[in-house]
Length: 81
Image (cartoon, rainbow, N blue to C red; front, side, top):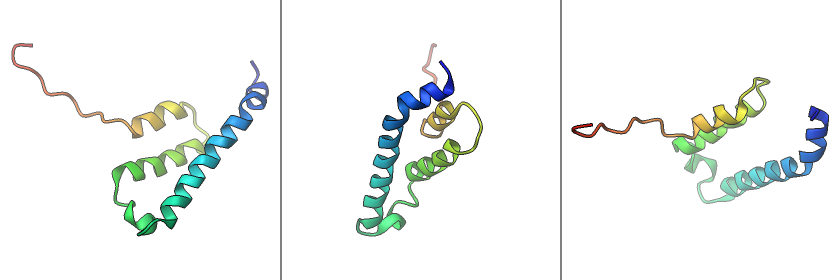
């Protein structure tokens, strides 16, 4: 399928998801303490970094965004395994 066809097919859903995120960020801004209340949260920082990935012109956006939001800490090894 051509990219233009994918865009035509997905546009309304893409638009909805971006608007939902914008509305969520607006609610954070209006909340007590505003964005300053969450700026120190690593999850918020990862989300904001992820927004940069969406517009950077490089590929593998979903994979790179997912890695920002993933805990890559290694599980401790069990004795005897």
